[in-house]
Amino acid sequence: MESSLNFFTGFKVLDLLFLGEAAARTLLISGISIASGTVLGVLFGWLLYEGRIFGSLTLAPVLDVFRSVPLIIQLVLFYNFAPIIGLSLDPFACGAAVLTIYTAALVANVARGGIEAVAMPLRRASRSLGMTYWQDMMYVVAPIGMRTVFPAWVGVALGVMKDSALVSVLGYIELLKASQILITRTQEPFLILAVAGAFYFALSFPVARFADRLEQRWSQ
Image (cartoon, rainbow, N blue to C red; front, side, top):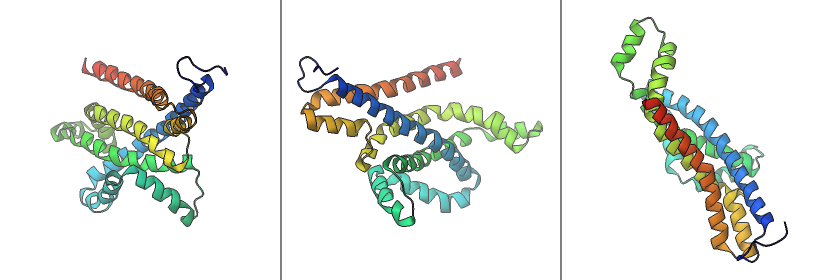
């Protein structure tokens, strides 16, 4: 375990395990943020659709702020502002909170687009058959809308997974932060970044492939 890898002096097998643990942390914070952000985003998208005037005057501007301001600025501001309002958050909790709201802001427009993609005559037909509003949303709007916007949601999820690297500015040791630590110690930036890129690919590729298979299954 202590032996160096061939042709790259200074990089040890234990360093590879360190990067693997960091990749697991990246997957953890990304998974939590994407899951919770998607739920919030769907709620926000529904509010934007149903409360057009209310949403456009109140919720939409707030979501625009989170979509427009660079994520790294949001992370630094929230991490430094949280203690002022009495919140004691570690880098992981702070990063997960900001990534969740950021994801929700992106998913909100995706969700609203999915609802708007369902033709009104189809919705009127479901209501004429005796469906309630919520039955119409669950059995008509949700299946059709989800198929329509699923590729866009996958793009958001993969983007958030890569953007989670910015949490490193708070001191959370995810994949990028671990790479920076090893580069400083080993002075092997090409190898370290190549291994980190391979880990990012290993995290993202299964999601992309699963999404492709699911889309193919739906199209049959």
